[in-house]
Length: 205
Image 1 (cartoon, one colour):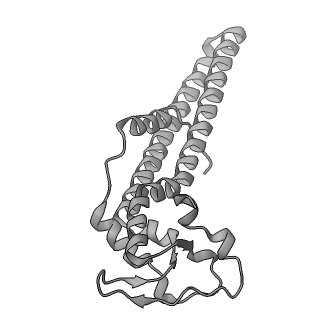
Image 2: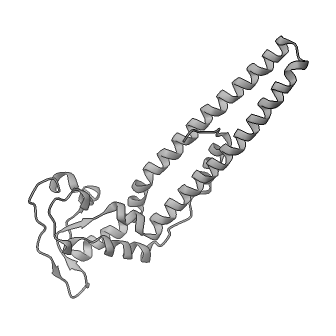
Image 3: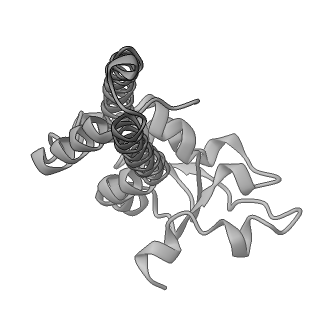
């Protein structure tokens, strides 16, 4: 069985009502519970570890930066629209229509870019837990080795379980100790999100 199938394989085992984990015993040599079947809550692990919290903080900062840029663009477009309206009395209908069409094209372009930037940011948020699990996978593998675990199951999909084999707290402690907040986000990603914010326009959401 591959590593990814051993970690968080809830589909095959957790969906069976009445499946009980193997008896858990304390191993004196490693100081952790020994069990072939381990249970872990990925959502809590992501929310409570230093690494997960840093990833969420970076996402929130990018979201706030985009919102700030949206408000700035909204003010700029409103000022440009006001200026165009004031010029109407001094322009011929043809000249005014040309400027109005140009302004409308600009607004539509900015809104399309804004929608794309928002979708990219939402996609980034959806992928954060997946990226997190990939980063902590070595820690979980080490935990499985120390506990004698053969599989780590998603606690959200387990109907019946014994608390003794829930290793979420232990995993969080090890992740904080071995990874901490993790490496800094690549500069290219940050610039990409800022670029998306620069192109963004006011959004309803």
